[in-house]
Amino acid sequence: MTTSPTPPQPGPALRALRDAVRSGVAGAEAEFWLRAEREGTPLVEPDEEGDPAYRLVTFVWRDVPERPVGDVLLLVHTVTDRDRHAGDLTPHLMRRVEGTDVWALSHRLRADHRASYQFLPGRGGRAELLRTDRASWRAALDRAVPDPLSRTPALPSSGARRPASVLSLPSAPPQPYVDGPREARGGSVERHLSGRRVVAHLPAGRPPTAVAVLLDGEMWGPVLDVGSTLDRMHEAGALPSTAALLVDTMERRMADLSCSEAFVDWLADDLLPWAAAEFGTPLRAARTVVAGQSAGGLTAAFAAYRRPDRFGLAASQSGSFWWPEDDPERGAEWLTRQYARGERRQVRLWMEVGLQEWLLLAENRRLRNVLRARGYEVEYREFNGGHDYACWRGGLADALASLLGGPPAGASGA
Image (cartoon, rainbow, N blue to C red; front, side, top):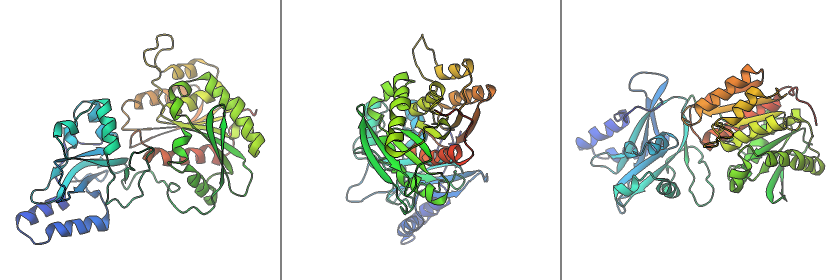
C-alpha cells in the first residue's frame, strides 16, 4: 500500500504555520503562501518515519475570504478512487488550519509515485460532496479544478472538464519527451475511413520506416498532443522515423475494444494498406506497433495474437485482461487463456500496469507469466501510479522506444 490507513499528521511546514498562528506571529500565513508560490505545491517533505523510500506530501488549497468554502475534497487519481469504490470519501476531506485560509491534507507516498490530482471545493452540504454513486462521481469530476500553485505542466482533459495537476515524486520514472519545445514538428493528415476518424502524424523531413497504431486517437491527438512527443523523440534520436496512426475509438469502445475480430482485421487489412499507399509506411509486421490503454491495451495484445502477420509488436498499458465479465461462453481472462493454449505467435509485447490499479494488477501479472512460460519476448514493468494518462503518456514513449528502437523483432513480414 502506498497510502497510510489514515492520513498522517501535518508535516513540519504545517506545524510551523499552526504554531506561529497560535503564537500570534504577524505575517505567518502570508509567509506560508509566499513559500508555496515560490516552491510550488503540493509540499513534499521527508518521511516523518525516516524511510527514504517515502515522502510526506501535503496538498494545500487557499480559501477566498469573499467566497469561502464549506469543505474541500482532494481527488488524487486512484488513491481517492479506491475509497470511492469502497463507498467512503471522508478520508479525502481537507482540513482547515485553524485561524487561516489554508486547507490541507497529507499523504505518505512512496517516492516513485506519480498521479494526476484536482480539488473539489464544496459550498453546499457535505453529504452531497461525499456522494459515491457513479453519476455523482462523474459530476464531481466535471466540477473539479487543478492546483493553482502547481509548478508542473497540467494534464489536459477532454470535453468540458478542466485540466488536472500532476504530482511526480523524485523517484518516479522520467518522462523526458512529454513536455518541451516543438522544434521539428511533423505533419498531420486527417481522414475518415469506414466511418472512423484517423489522424496520421508523419515524421518531419524523412520517410517513415516504422508504424505505430495508437488507439483512442481522439485523446492522444487533440488532447495530449502525442505528435509533439514523437517529434521530440525523433529529434533526440530516441525513435526511428515513425508514422503514428491515431484511430478514434472512444465512441465505439464496447464494439471495437473488446477483442473484436472485425475491428482488428480492419486495422490490419484496411488501415495499414491505406497508410502504405498514402504515406509509404512499411507493411512489415516487425516494424508495426499497435498500442492501447485499458480496453485498448487488451485490444493491442489481441491484435498481435490474431494478426501477427501485420502486428509484430504490441504495447499494452493497464490492459483490461479481466475481460469479459459475465460471459459463460468465453469466461474471464479469455485472452490470457488464448495465449496459454494457442500456437505461439512470432510477436514481441511490451506491458505495464500501475501498482495502484487494484482491479488490473493481478490479471496483468498472470498474462505476463503465461507469455514468459510460452517463450514470448515480453518487456513488463509496474509503475507506482494508477489508471492515469499522467503515467501513460510517458509509458507510451518508453514503449515505442523499446519496441522500435532496438533490432527488429523476428516477426514475419506481410
